[in-house]
Amino acid sequence: MSAPFSWIRPEPWGIHVVPADIWVDPSRAVPRALVTHGHADHARGGHGATIATPETLAIMQLRYNTSAGAAPAAYGESVSLGGGVTATFLPAGHVLGSAQILLEHAGERMIITGDYKRAPDPTCAPFAVTPCDIFITEATFGLPVFTHPPISDEISKLLKSLKDNPENCVLVGAYALGKAQRVIAELRAAGHHDTIWLHGAMEAMCRLYEEHGVALGDCRLVSDAPSKEAMRGSIVIAPPAALSDRWSRRLPDPITAMASGWMQVRGRARQRGVELPLVISDHADWNALTATILEVNPQETWITHGREEALLRWCQLNQRRARALALVGYEDEDD
Image (tube, rainbow, N blue to C red; front, side, top):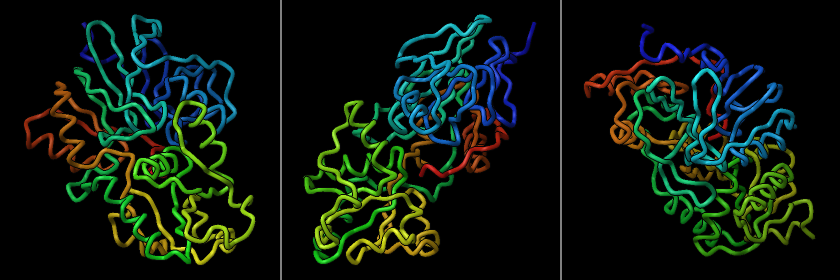
């Protein structure tokens, strides 16, 4: 008789579902892949066949020009993978289309979360707590020091800076997939309905979000502004790399902001020359990570891509079986 969960094999470049010969979020091209979401450290082109949510497949087509072998799986839909394995995609609350993947085989249930958060987000479906035997969790912010404030507090800081400096614009660095759209949607929810100006790299992804039902309001390209003066008293959103780029010179006296969970680390903000750090994360913080493990209540927790040691120690102190996985290619670029 085989050992429990011997059908799942963590490898450095991804998680191999052996009976179905399929990989989850592999960092290299494989014949068959399950993909949790569209960020570059989880999704890539070159797979022979890709199973993911329709939104993730659309994001992959936009970012990596992938179309061959795309097989959509809606939330809650179970897909037979072969070898007696089924996969069910469940909301992860990370970005548009992000999913946890529930794998079932021979009466055993494993959930691979990819990246996830528990905080509300108007741009994507909320995380679905689902019981399982083994729970594979990220640990990007897996240290007790990381406790993310309510996003409403950070949006209020942004709007106050805008109000206090009407002769400037506020330039917000935010990643093009997920973070930018969430910031825009939260600004709209807070009552800010003025034009928001976008770096050209933001346009296509914002359009994709709107095509999938996420209303972003009046967003225009900086390159279409009639003059620099037209952007005074406005919010501009650009990729983080553009904050110190020559591109920013076309803006009227910008106040530099950055939306990231890493802005809680003052040294990172200073290093990037950020005047207005906004602690806005699309990952679970320490309290959310530990609370989720308690809610899911697995027999064993596997921890990956992040600060594995502290979360592993927390599991041990709380009499919970756990292990750290050594996967390569996972980064914090999306936060």
